[in-house]
Figure 1 (cartoon, rainbow, N blue to C red):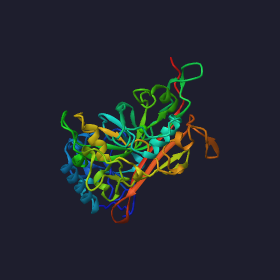
Figure 2: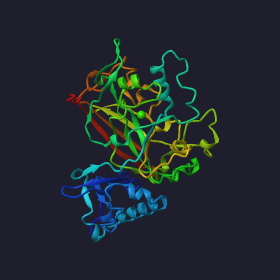
Figure 3: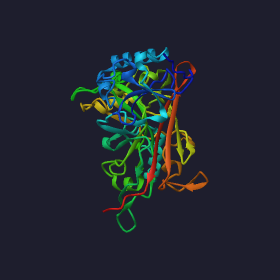
Figure 4: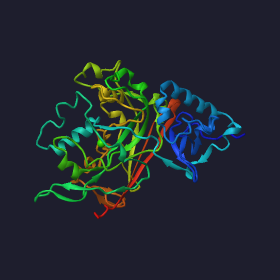
Length: 399
Ligand code: CA
């Protein structure tokens, strides 16, 4: 009989207990939680090593079981870890450094929103410098978004190959490796239970459909994006890769992190209205570029609530499924050092920043970017989200 000793104020203490998928050499991936720096196999911990849901290679079967079951499983994990580990759990525990972490969710569909007023206004100024109003007329009335590519969502630690594509030049379009490769620091929301086609998720019901939160880096090729995006929006400038953190922090762990969104003015249409007010999350993000923190974007400044994003996503009757993922859009605060994309931080590349002693604008081959975040937990604790890490490797020559 042993007890796992983890400090009460650890970022991965009993108040967090995120979900992930791990493997050890010679074994198939299985569900786990992280407790301190331990990775704990869920099915072994809870007593049925072959449980088809808790020993699954992705969270999707657990997501499909719904909110009441998520509460039940979280309570069971908490109770099992709080005391002495039962005899059957002796093989459940691994050191974090001894396992491989995998994509936690088989991502069904993926939508990316644009929920930061500061980011949308900065991009408006950069992409439409002649327009005195940086926000387009729809922006305060609906959470703007586009459908992305779920197949190119990868787990933290996966190398990112520099994409090739078309970009504009003075003599017409040219093809080649992107020269303006960028990041977007975002939060991703995992949909636990979806909705059938034709039956939208009401905004007040949305939180029972939301399972949890990941860090999300929406790698973006600005030169490809700028040439292709009119009039239908982002496509190849975004669809080559997005990185998520391996741990899904449950919404159930984030109740102390809820904060009202900024005031929404003008009033939103009734299907987006929330009483007494829409809530966001007080998540402090951090962007590290080649070992140096260059930005600290505050998620609390996001204009649109995750519940509003999910309600909007389905209001036309579009179905969602367990494992759908929607991301918030770049998180940027009002201050320069709170901008979540390098195009904003360097103002379109015109104001280089000093990173680890070098003057830099966009990403070079070999650069590494790591997103991290924390949020308030209960009783003065903090919740950790782990990291979303990626390194740029050179473009592949065309064969
Ligand atoms: Ca984005």
